[in-house]
Image 1 (cartoon, one colour):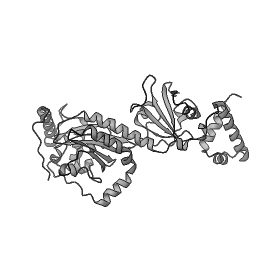
Image 2: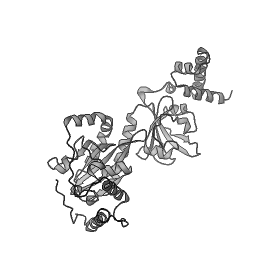
Image 3: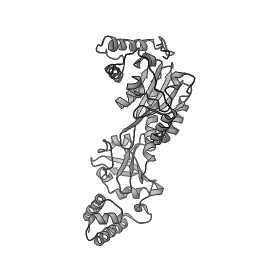
Image 4: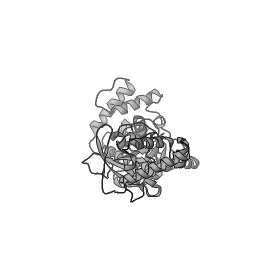
Length: 378
């Protein structure tokens, strides 16, 4: 069993804070009463009650699962894209907190450690055991922590000392934020933990900002032909405040970051394979690829709601679609495309599926192009 003193004082004079936590613990865990307001955050109370429902008791010893080399390697293999995308952000985060006695932990969506960075004292089992790749730090395994709570609540959290469920983990203070992948599903979380450290709730903002950077890195690492950087007119572009959309060569949305999902109607769910960019913006998708040839000029994008966004279109050089070949104006591109479609349909004797295969596009894309062609003025 690890040492578990709950300190009565903190360097920032947190006697009152710790006393409030202790009153909340007594109300929930001993008296089974309704929690008085403003003692702890609501998500902490919910986590405590989940732990109680699983039969946990606060005085139970916390035994971290053993991690074999085989388990560590399997964990790294299964999460290699997350680890690779997060690596530079983790290193930057570690530099930011190097003098605070905090370190960073990255987990997958199940709360299993996939990487750690920072000033980790491996001679201290309280630090070593929670930073091993393959260690299970889920809520069911070790109770209320920033890791389990962030993954359950799907929002950034801050926990200090006794806000952790078990007495064994009451020496930790931690901030956590969930990570969402290109399709909107939770893929893991980012945590910053200190041991017997001064309370620093501002770390929740730092972790949330770093989590956004990891999400953007995951998004841009996936296969795409065009990246759209979005923001509202009048806002400077080029920061984590931008929405990001990835498109394939036919204009299908293959991924979006959290900001884009908040800006653009129709992107709130998971699994964007069936959403075409023409369904969210009121202009032909070919114009987006044309705009990538003029990167110095932001594009104005009309949403079907009547709102407008500004965008920068950035082509991915190694898989740029034919629509981006330079020198041809938009009208000429449409004429060439219409000729190719007519020829493919003639060759296929009107069989749309066969014509689509010959053109290397989907049947849905061909139908959409046929519809757009019919709407063009004669």
